[in-house]
Image (cartoon, rainbow, N blue to C red; front, side, top):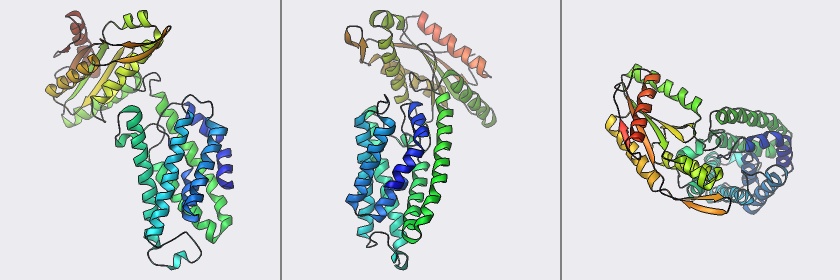
Length: 366
């Protein structure tokens, strides 16, 4: 427990920066200590270790952060507690028991250790997906690879946790050697998080215009090499200024977030959605026919019309409905041979949609 708290203190500044860069799924390195605890201690003591570590993180790092309210800390700690119990259950079921000096002499203990790590990881991942579904309505594997580091970090910390437990039993002084790799891992993941934050629109969580443009340029190069097609959508909210004028800019922001979520829900995980500016969104749809591009655009248009957004106003809260969007479609290569031409085609189609009644999808060829 002391080692876990010391490591948390040494990494406090890095962890605070990781939290401040965005409200995103977040893998920390505490599993090094909690998994080691599950291998060395009775299940209830390992659970107590997890609670102590997360209480320290809350008091010293996360308290007062907008992105880390107390109920989320409780949920995260509960995930680790249950993961510890799962790992302990595997060790008990296989007869391996807690790690000790004679552990290596018994056959099958290596498989038991791997099973305990797998149980810890699966319970943790399953609860993370459940939490994501409860909050956002989306629960896909992409949640585990979001933003500031992929789920490989959690697997790496479990491996280190196993090594820490072994070192603690056979040569305790070697445990100190884990601090530098942990610190380096933490800083590397922070750097990755900063890179991704720089590519993200902070209001909606979508790609910003520059990052989306880079993704589209890369897809254009791939399509040229493979002689394949891809689609572009330009999505513009109709009469969005009325929302801001009637309800205020905070309500307008709530609408933008709701629309961004709606668009993400109607496209594939590997499609790229960006905020092009203001109330305009852009969607990149790789490897898709024009018919399917238009069908996707129609799903997005229909989804926006069904939105009911609870938004803050000067007088309290209001429900904003009757939203709609106009969408312009362009498909490579028929809509243009380069990115500038494709964007111009999609933008021209968008303005035709807005000028001919709004709340419609229009597709134009170059």
